[in-house]
Length: 256
Image 1 (cartoon, one colour):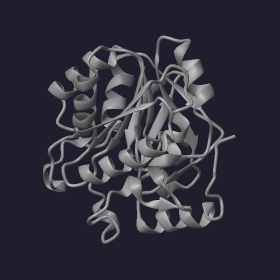
Image 2: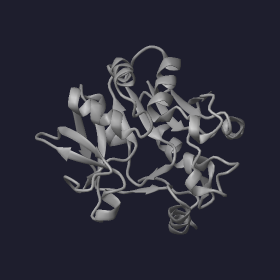
Image 3: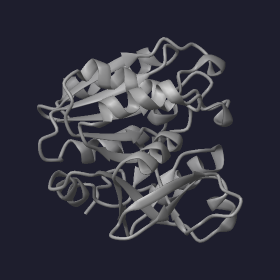
Image 4: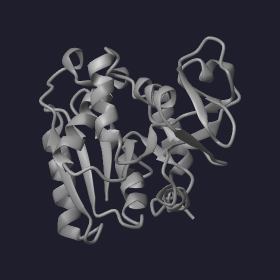
């Protein structure tokens, strides 16, 4: 089984820090943002490879990151593949859905797959969520509590039905239907190969991943993990510095 990490954004909101350097490799408390995620993924049962999608501008940065870990044997037998989506500027990017399609095409054979954005630090364990996902037949997404209205209006908000079922994902709603937000962390069944293809054919909203998740909610079975945890979203210079201050001094940070 595989994990896909989407790292092809240009992070223009974080210039000048990211003008010539990828956001997922910015150091937080002495460790690249991306490493907090890969460290967890490397311990998930059955995951043998990470497929990372970069844009053309930052491809060499991620290649050097991989070479450094390969030399040190950081992640043991875990294979790390890096793909260049060919985009050189923000105006012509493929978007999250397009980059995910590229990764799934390179993987080839449909299978269960974990997908995440590369600019979040998850402060909860992925292993028990992955284990429960493997036992079921539904796509799974993560739900975290957010109490601040202004934050809810800037992200994807979930509308739950019964038995953990998710009815909709509302992207940046002015009137949020709940306090459950959806970080870019998804557990997909093999059917996602065909479902993503149908989404790309029917929708022009390929950028924010929430549009694809909403498509799945409206057209198939999606269940949510209502997690008691939080994430550090590296979405701006302010949140980046806040995360660094919070984790500074914990360079060997591990999820319990």
